[in-house]
Amino acid sequence: MGRRKGPSLTREDVVQAALTLVRLEGADALGVARVARELGIRPPSLYNHVASGPELAVATSFAAQRLLVDDLTDAVRGVDDPRAQLETLCRAIRRWVHANEGLYALMARVEPQPDHPDAGATDRALLDLFLRPLGQLGVPVDRRVHAIRALRSAVHGFVLLESARQFQLAADSEVSFELLIDAVIRGLVNAG
Image (tube, rainbow, N blue to C red):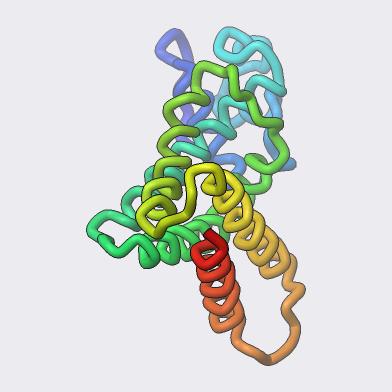
């Protein structure tokens, strides 16, 4: 990891070091002392940028969520069909989680912070990625949040099982995933 010491060190440097650490070593590696060591500073110096270990975890989780939202936004760019958008989002989440298992684990551990200053824009962008195509597919307004939760739960559960190497049968997990997202999306659209 790149180290920046001295007065030029910023909170963003700390968060970037934490992101890199979690990517390389997993969510359990995240801690004030560990990030300080990676930055080549003493742990008390890190408290000039984050107040505590939990605050470091929250800041790192928000940064990871922004990376996920950026990746999802890129994935659906140019995809016009709303059903294809939802399928693309589900596939992109799965790819992102496999490429960033430590960050995803951290995001799952950190309790949602809806009042946190970093929450609003990122949460809204993530919701909009799903709300728009669900609306275009005719899912009623009062069911869209439920639809997002259903999709998220299906993808989350599948990816967790897959990451834990729970799918031991010879059947192709790609086919299983496609069946899952097809069934969930079809069910959500037809239930409207």
